[in-house]
Image (tube, rainbow, N blue to C red; front, side, top):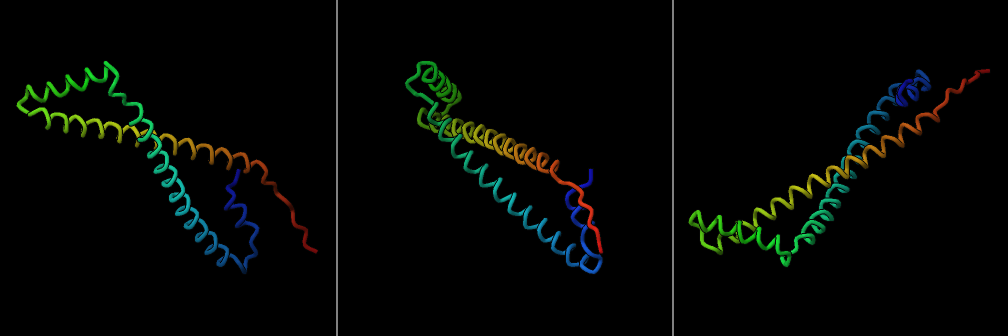
Length: 136
């Protein structure tokens, strides 16, 4: 199976090949830039949603969560850090973990979007047919 670009360029008249090549290159560059912009926008939006969802799932009223916080702060105190600094360190660690998980989840979401777009492209490629042009 030949690529769409090769198929399209094979149908260009010989006197228009240089113009068609320049146009093809420009379209490829602009499409790539737009694709990156769209995927980056999707990833950023998804990351915001994941941050919100992960932060909402932290329930400080949960006995298990409260025990984890208390034990973490106690470890800090045992290492000579005062309670306020230990709480601040715990908050920074929790924030970092949320940000990391949100980034991983948003990249995964963006990956699935690109797979979906690729499958659409493959499906559309099956509708390309060769048409013979008869010159009179």
